Length: 217
Ligand code: DX5
Ligand code: ZN
Image (cartoon, rainbow, N blue to C red; front, side, top):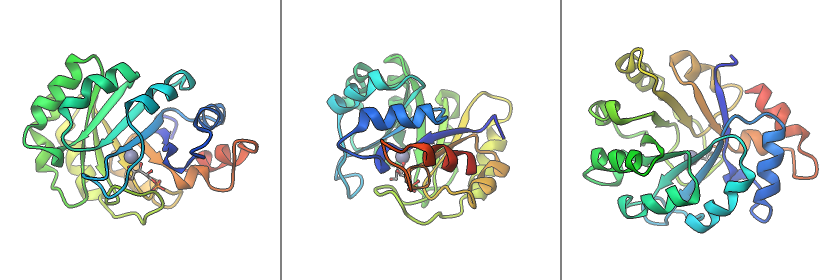
């Protein structure tokens, strides 16, 4: 389905060569670039912060989709705006005031996403939909690439029904493969993040598998 966007997660790219990895995956057809920011506190892993994300920016010709797995969020919003994020997604579990967080992301000039962990019910984001450009339904517990898909199709279906005809994306992140992607697309998702399933078998010097992998999803 051509209306479904593929957002490769550079968490599965070569960490010594992000610029060329981003260029390679875009040349092979990526719609967005998904950037996983982890703080070693909200999730049990640590990746990169605003200066690194700012360094990725000139390499991203498509759309830079920044997934914050950090708490607290609000004090970092301006830094990610300055780094050049197009979409900034925060977790609903990251603090008591997700509504304020989404407002602040919009004020800073970015599109605003709200993410839910697998254990969080759809209801947690219902009142936030008027402020959201995207809902990110996690299909793994965040922190690592290469985990097994957790079926959240019922949650996706519920949120798609609440969205109705509003232009709000539903993004899926975690364990997306050629086998699991059709399930979530059928339920109403339109942006698929994939890390290991995109980058497997390829490299910066041989990126052709990236394209084959994305087309297979
Ligand atoms: C998980 C991250 C994902 C991750 C997905 O915490 O948010 O974006 O990179 O990796 P795969 O596609 O390998 O499950
Ligand atoms: Zn992610």
